[in-house]
Length: 212
Image (cartoon, helix red, strand yellow):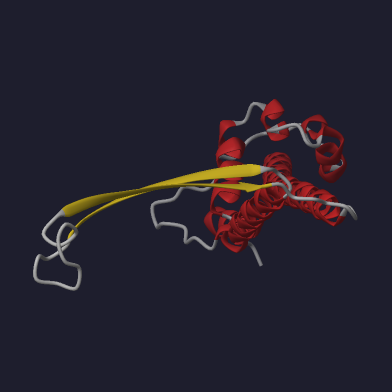
């Protein structure tokens, strides 16, 4: 059964659209255009994109060294709209807040509070003159200090654990970005290679038809 070029092209782009849909949970508008078919030589397609991404980690953005604006846009869209990356970023913020709280608990601090109160006593009230019928001002100043004593190192251990947690969350986020970008790039170049092979097969078939 011979597939028309339009149907073949639609089936070929399906994996890339599915990948972007899973990573970003976004729909492709009807007017969206398929990636432009390129005659990609075999030397441009890396043998192992995952290894390429790992070797460049955590350099960003490693996929731009191909100089393909269309590929850059697809990767950026996936990274921007990925729910998993958004969740990872939220975990980094939570770890940062925990670290800030733990560090604050180990630092000395002081607080100064001042207040003023103006009160008039009734001449017919409980207090007779000279208090009754007069107005008095009351001022107060209070200084509070705090000096944590971490005799057993518990607070230092908590700070160290919070630092490690934040670093782990950052590494988790960076790794998730690399894996997602590598998946998009792998699918993109596989698609371009398939189209190039299809073009070669069609060209060979045309030559054979001319020879018959």
